[in-house]
Image (tube, rainbow, N blue to C red):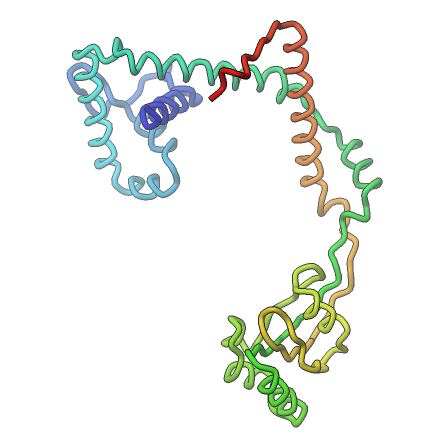
Length: 274
C-alpha cells in the first residue's frame, strides 16, 4: 500500500504541474488505442523526474516515449479490469485526499499568512549579534602515535630540525597522516579539550610538547590563526529570515490547532491504547 500511495502522490504532483492542459495545438507523438501522447506531455513528465532519471532520458526521448506507451497500455488494462473500483485503491485514494486537504489547509491558513519583514530580521540580528560570530580558528597539524615514548621521540626529532609533515606522513597513525598531519582550520569546540587547549596556546610555527588525549599521544604544530570575526548582516540575513519564518509557522500551527481543540469535544480512552 505504501508503494501504491507513493505512485499516486507522484501522479497527482505531475497532474498539478502548470500547463498540464494545453489549450493550443500540440504535436502528437504517438497514439495508443485512442490515447494520445503529445510533445508537451512527454516534456512535462520528463521534467517531473528526479535529476538522475532526467539525465538518463534527456538524450534518448524515444526510450522515454516507449515508457509512456507502456503506461498507457497498463492504464487501459486497469480501466478494463475496473481497478478504479478496487477497495484497496479506494482506501489509499481516500487517505491521499485527506493528506492533500490537510496540506492545502496548512498552506492556506499558516504558510501563506506567515510573513517576516526585513525590519524584523534586522531587529533579530541587532539583538543577537553575539550569535553571529565566526570563532577563532587555527590551522593545525599533528602527529598521532599510540604510546608516549614514541611521541616524545618524535617531538625531539622535530625540535632537532626534521620536517614536521615528512615525519607525520611516516609516523602518524591518524587519518591526517597521509596529508602530513594537516587538520585544516579548526575552531574552538571542534576538538577534544586537551588537544584544543594545547593548539590554541601555541604560537605560530611552534611545536607542542606531547599531548595525551583519548585517541593517543599527539605532537601538534600551528601554522596560521584567524581571530574571531563578527559576521555582517548581509552574510546571515537569509538564514535569519528562514529561521524566523519557520518559528512563526510552528507557532501559528500550534495556536491554530489549539483553537480548533477549544471548539471540539475530544475524549481519549487511554485504557484502550495498546
